[in-house]
Length: 116
Image 1: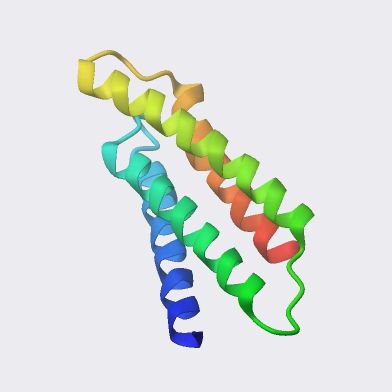
Image 2 (image 1 turned 135 degrees about the vertical axis):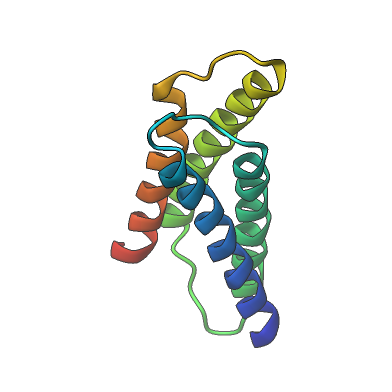
């Protein structure tokens, strides 16, 4: 069970790295990529799996308020990434605010995880 939790944590970090790395890479001409959307989905699924694994673990308390806040932030990231991805696929310009929302909210999500 520890290995499975570590694997989910690794996937969660990998998704975060893709979102933030792509955001920084495209900073001069902000856009949203397909990879950012799928990275948000990976983060969502691995995060939910980690919560489930911790809930099953004997004697471990999950901070449900923190998980709820992180879930809301991640849903914002996923929705913004989906909208940006669809605009990119259609050849429409992606607004700077939308592109920065994806990366910025991912950074905020990481900060909540570390500092709360």
